[in-house]
Every structure is written in C-alpha cells, then in structure tokens.
Image (cartoon, rainbow, N blue to C red; front, side, top):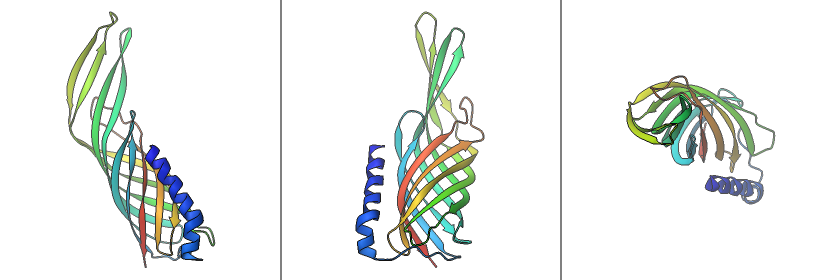
Length: 210
C-alpha cells in the first residue's frame, strides 16, 4: 500500500510540474472513435493485506464521455476470512484464493476543457475464476482448545459486478497514466466461501489511437 501511495504522489507531482513544461499546451484529444489500449499493475485487497496484481484492457470511444471496455486481470492470493458461530464460541475459516477476472463495462469520463486530468467512473460485469485452494478451519471450543482442520476448496467461475473510478493524467495528446480504484462483488461463491466484496488499486500507462 505504501508503494501505491508513493506512486500516486509521484504521478501528481509530475503532472503538475514537469509535464506542463515538457509538453507545453498539449491536452487530450476529445473525439469519438478513439481506440485505447492500457496496461496496469497494482495491489488487490481481500481481508488481510495488500497483494500484487496486474492486467490489461482495451476501450473504444463512442464519444468523449462513453468508452465501452473489456479487461482482464490476475489477482493472486486474496485471503478470505469468515467468522462462524459454533455454540457459545465463534470459529473462523481462512482461504487464500488466486483469482482471474474478465469483465466488460463502461468508462464514464468527465473531460474538462484545457485540462490534462480526466476523472472517470467505471461500472461493469464479468466473471471471476477462483483457483482451487486449501482452506484452514479453526474450530474454537468453550474450554479454550482450538481444533485446526484443512479443507479443499474447488475451483469455480462466478458472475461478478464491478464498480469504481479513477483519474487519467495525460502526459501528451495520446499518452496517459491512469490511477484506478475498483471494487468487485461476486454473485456467488463455492461453499464454504461467501461472496464478499474485494478491492483493487491499479496504476499504468494508457495509449490512445485514432
């Protein structure tokens, strides 16, 4: 997470000082039918800590505002934790699941005249594949004893909504750096998992072509 914060600060500093001097008055081209290719890396967050991730996307501009897109990303090792009532005590389950996400959706961009910074919102729907994993169940008893059990979680493919937003910092007319925060809400999950929301922070280059 600290690396992500440092990168955000660096991008903002470059955009506000170095970039204006290097590129003069260049601003993003606001025209329909722009084709866009992007790469990104960042961190995913389940319930324990941040972990590295990466991916890429393509988008097509119907207008200056609406960009349908398709995206794929890999989110390794998202730890899921569940608290399970067991009589007078509460037991817990932990699962470390590698995920691959493919989805499509819409970027809703809000370009401002003469500005290199373009904020946007994103909504989408797709599939998340969870790889087979091994979970650990901690059964707690009123006596204070803890029974540890391992359980195999099968691989699965689950429909998932995603939502979020970000900023695009244009360093030239056709090249930008994007910062994006996105949440994912699976509709289902294989037992004994539950469809909890998880999150992703990403940063990466964006290239626009006419």
